[in-house]
Picture 1 (cartoon, rainbow, N blue to C red):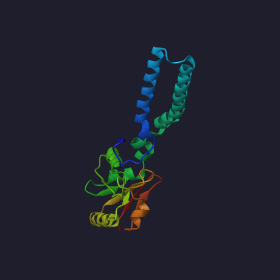
Picture 2: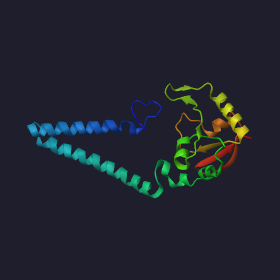
Picture 3: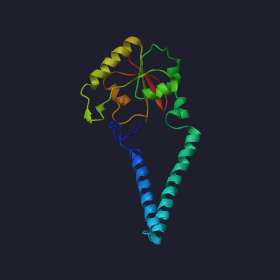
Picture 4: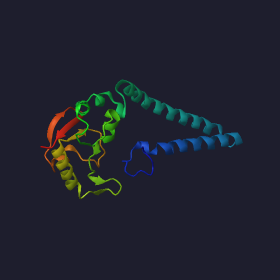
Length: 190
């Protein structure tokens, strides 16, 4: 979840959504109080209603395509294309004792119920410093996956900047592409 105290999240426009709600409530309360006390000129009242109308209309215009897309394709973890991706189908067919690492372990668990381990981070999102042990961590994971026939599942466009790309992992250990599509790839360690 996005909160003000979760520094691991990359800031985006949703981070200020709670501030918008509180600020809008405070402005409306102050305007209502001024109106009741008779301190609010008629022109300011009209300006306030006009501003409120503009805010509501802009949010409505942005919401309609979002709602249409959500109804047609699903949103986030429930996107139809992701649920039907080659990687998810492949993971459902794997025996439960085969270890799997991914850049979207929570998504895989949500869709398939399979416990998957997260790939290590390239850098610490809290301190914004590179993890000097990243290559060693990937090499250790690769040894374990190679010994037990494990897989690395990579979803494109799902990961924040501090998660490793498939190319970054391939610089440390060789990856053999088992299958893939535009949304996902499954790799083994030769």
